[in-house]
Length: 141
Image (cartoon, rainbow, N blue to C red; front, side):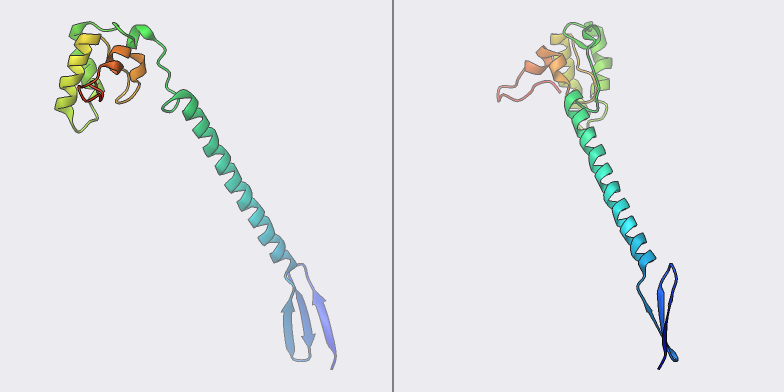
């Protein structure tokens, strides 16, 4: 019986009489290997980007907001008539709006300061940050 081998860039064909046998797919193997390498590089890039984002957020606070303007946010930066609007801004996103407004205005009238944002950032306003309840929890929202 006479057998012949026909090769092409896609595959090899072994022909033995009426039977054909396909073997070796070098191009397919090369493509699969290239795709696997590309996938690994893609995953490594995603990991690097997420690590960079974590570093930036850790060094700058919530997404890199800087509140260095003490005249706008620091102690004594408000007049007592400004407290309702600033507390309304501060308590806008809480589900406990009434208690938040009550304690925020109480703190604002004492400290003449309301921290920026909806939560956190209390270090900018030390009086607001350090006023505690009898149980030792934060008094100001």
